[in-house]
Length: 328
Ligand SMILES: NC(=O)c1ccc[n+]([C@@H]2O[C@H](COP(=O)([O-])OP(=O)(O)OC[C@H]3O[C@@H](n4cnc5c(N)ncnc54)[C@H](OP(=O)(O)O)[C@@H]3O)[C@@H](O)[C@H]2O)c1
Image 1 (cartoon, rainbow, N blue to C red):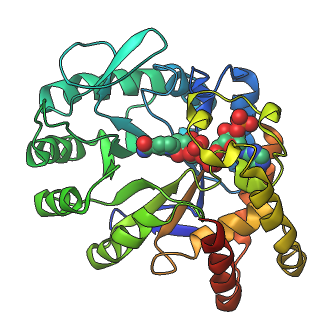
Image 2: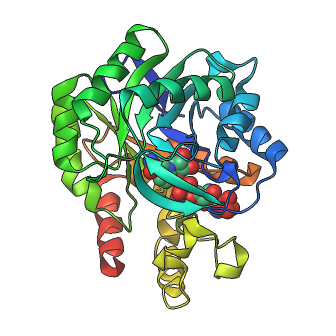
């Protein structure tokens, strides 16, 4: 597995990460098998995947607890990221959504982050977080200036509770506010072959400021594995129900891509999943994109991890982009 530097933090992590959103097993993704999730995280490490990403909001604490169990006794083998700024246990904040019987609010004020980091450390059974990411940004009805949030995150870094600072779901203006306030090492953004807009607007900024671009949902919630023939094969929870590629009229477009790319898969000796991961890792400046795929089953991590070693050539990258542009 190739590795890469995370911003200017000095942290070295696998190019492919494992995301533990579905491991939370909530209304977003449906029930997860915790024992299998833990085996999957362990197998990831054997396959060279060191980077594990979770968040308090995934399963309302459950994902962090499962990741904590998986990493117990082997914490040093992983680069662990978790997030802050989404709360379901307080009223105060900008309303984001209701799910699983709770109301989730955005609140990135320092006094709230001080509570959150301790709760995450406890659930994760660790005394440090490698990359601490602000999950979603303030809403106008509940202001939390980025400069204040950053000031507090920098203090956490000084205290050794976190090693690097990340932010997620950013506008370009918010990106600039972060870098003006301190060292931002990673941004985590929705980016896939079929949804390229965020990359087009943020890749150059990441390059200019030495920030790693971490692409989340690079498989469009599994559809870009090419294995999902119809929506009844998977749990259509909140995470998938809004993804248009699962609609019956769009599935044939994915099947056509899979057919078109069969010769490329043969050329690189890989699956469609791995080809897509290789394509994604080659974006940005060619060495600053980290590919964060979700996995909660052994066969998924076996498939995804090998994507970290697929390096399509420039002509194939360009032709795949054209193929993707034809449908999205
Ligand atoms: N910052 C944010 O706002 C944000 C938002 C979304 C995600 N994220 C992070 O990014 C990570 C990745 O996003 P994502 O989970 O949406 O990514 P994804 O990789 O596009 O989709 C993951 C899901 O696809 C299925 N899958 C994965 N590998 C597969 C394979 N090889 N073959 C067939 N199906 C496969 C699994 O679904 P089943 O488990 O149902 O089989 C898996 O849970 C998350 O886990 C989370 O850590 C962050």
